[in-house]
Image (cartoon, rainbow, N blue to C red; front, side):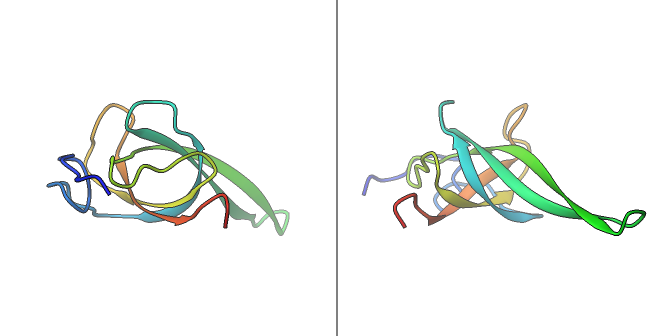
Length: 99
């Protein structure tokens, strides 16, 4: 396992995780050190007494030591603003595609 020198890593760097922690599926890992995570939530509509599914995509920082790939399920934590679109960091890979 390679040593992590990333300052924006939650385990080895100086960034602190605060706020919400979510679990989602990695849809894209094409950007450099970034993954796009899709979360599916169910929301109740009281007027119709039914539920609807909501999909949300979040960009998160992907440290080199974790290196999440597409179709992995990951746990992400909220941090300070890292860039224009990223305010989450990947904490761990919970389930791989093969599992």
